[in-house]
View (tube, rainbow, N blue to C red):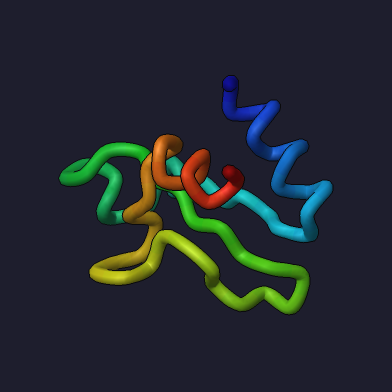
Length: 64
């Protein structure tokens, strides 16, 4: 699945996918990451050790 397909599938379930901002200080060290939030802006996935620490595979596991 592509990132846009994952975004659509999450939106259908009431979630939102956020990607590491381009100028975020952690992007240089860790690369792009993802964070999933619900409709109340509560983090569901991707913020255990640091912000945006989930991968697309982690997000797919949440979907299925």
